[in-house]
Image (cartoon, rainbow over all chains, first blue to last red; front, side, top):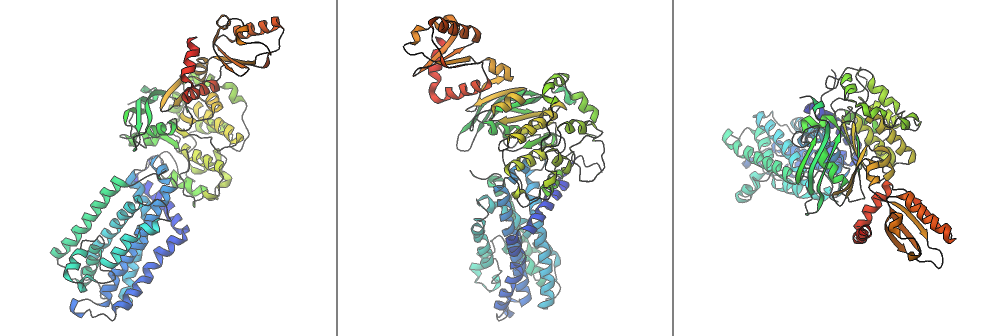
Amino acid sequence: MSGTVTTPAGRMTALARAELTLLGRSRGTLVAALFVPLVLPFSVWSATKDMDLEKSGLTVGTVVLPAAIGFSLLFAVYGALVGVFTARREELVLKRLRTGELRDTEILAGSALPSLATGLVQSLLLAVGCTVLLDLPAPRAAHLAVLALLLGLVLCACLAAVTSAFTRTTESSQVTTLPVMFVSMLGSGMAVPLEVLPDRVASVCELLPLTPVITLVRGGWTGELSAYEALGPVMTALAWTALGVFAVQRWFRWEPRR
Amino acid sequence: MNINEHEHVIEVTDLRRVYGGGFEAVRGISFSVERGEVFALLGTNGAGKTSTVELLEGLARPAGGRVRVLGHDPCAERDVVRPRTGVMLQEGGFPSELTVAETARMWAGCVSGARPEGQSLSANPRRPPAGRALRRPVRVIARRRSALVAEPRGRFGNAASVRAGRRSAGGGLRTGSEVLELVGLAGKAGVRVKQLSGGERRRLDLALALLGDPEVLFLDEPTTGLDAEGRRDTWELVRGLRDTGTTVLLTTHYLEEAEGLADRLAILHEGRIAAAGTPAEVTAAQPARISFELPEGYFLGDLPPLADMGVSGHEVDGRVVRLRTRQLQRAATGLLVWAEGAGVELRRLDVRSASLEEAFLGIAREASGAAEKTAKEYAA
């Protein structure tokens, strides 16, 4: 190998490797990304275990696991990446990277890879953990859960880039991430399953960005989602992703406002 | 297509840049840079230097006009251009928590022509060493020979090593440690970027711009924040690169830097080119100056007719008289002969040839509302 001409994959790997090192050195991000998604499911569990889930056809496991994966996406991916994108912009790293051979998409994707990997591994561990601790049976439609996880990862990276466009400093990212975090936790079926909400409220909540992910993960385990029923959430998630991509192209800032 | 057909490595035609708020930072400038040339954009802060360089780097699209780097549009044809250019931004650009070595490794992974650490040398098919030698214009060799004789032994690696290294098979400047060595940062490899001094960060930035041995280098204020020694080391490095055929476009607000380093330069002012050419040409366009204090009891009218002495303009500030002339010897002789004859001493006498500094200050002065006055003097 002569190493004379770079490829997109090679460039993104080099960038991702540096970002992984940086992730390991950012204590605040590590705590939020690694521990919060492991701790929050306990509060969902303690709230759910006394709930009457029989008539909605749910179990404690099928409520806690989708919520746990949602927390992982929100904290390990979304929250972490808003910080990453904003910090790199503030340090003029994004501008520096843009002077080279990396394309804009490669810069965003390469920087996002370590956080995406964290979210992926964490979600898999949470699935194993819930299976063992909450007597969760094996997923009946695993492909839906996998699809949900992939959609969720891409969507959260997109949302993070959009949020970062409206975030001036890393400190302010703690505030700018709150709307998506709160709305998702309350309305996307994480804290409270949509099945137990009034129909009218539930149909609005179905349109929120993370709801399709939660619905599909749950459907993956219960197996009660027909292909037709799964189509709605998939389309919603794709629509949000498309909207996110458009917003990034339109509003993402590569240099700090001065 | 043979790249040697493009003798103009950088071509800029009627370039304009307008920012979001409507501010026109670059207002129709044109210039070209030949292969192996060091070209300086000189100007005060806000003159439009960085705005121009960013258009050349392909970071932004011009609002009007045309940019060609190596014969291509740096935005639309970035895949062709980027692997052959190196960029040093005006500031920063590195994650503060990475070490110097990690930063270099990351950047090396993103640069064509760079090699991962520890890999054996292999000829670069894109740029054979023979091509390097051919591209080197003969006229370059003669230039600045004298300046190159005295090699500095500064903190930078010997600048000669640039030339020696690049003449070896496969060339140098391929790995992170090679470029760090070159700028004297090898000893800082394990240090986090946030712990580097301002000057060290500039050198790191310069080092990474050199990775992959680019044909064209864009250096935005490469020596700002460096001490005298670091500045001189950078100059030697740039000269060494130029001598191996690298084309360098740099911005600076240091006059001596432009005068000593650039083959040609353009002085930018308020988004326009106010003067351009070789340092000698730009300087020659400026008048020489004589200033002195009028002796007690004498007035300007007591001097011989100014026009007869070849004086093209004058200013009186209290008792101090400033004369401009393109015939310095004639004017000085006329003045001194008069003083000798009148038996007076011209105190604070200062006679100086035109310099780039005069050109630069002249342009700045025109900006500060003195334009009218100057024009009148020249008409006189």
